[in-house]
Length: 95
Image (cartoon, rainbow, N blue to C red; front, side, top):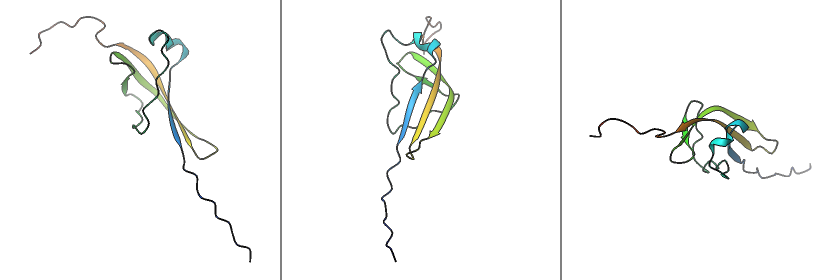
């Protein structure tokens, strides 16, 4: 009887990529690239708001999961620009 050879399972890899439609790229700072999502951080969900800088707000419009041939997972987080925090001075009294 032939002995079966066991192959160790390769660790599945997951990559999370932030994606911005071409018509929204103008809202990134000049020369700035789309930042990477921090490794190990939970992926945002559709409807969440993420900040690419301390004042630049983006809405998550779509989350795409793609199972790769090697068993890995590619996650695309599609964003739409909401605006800058404090685009105009706030009025009111701070307590």
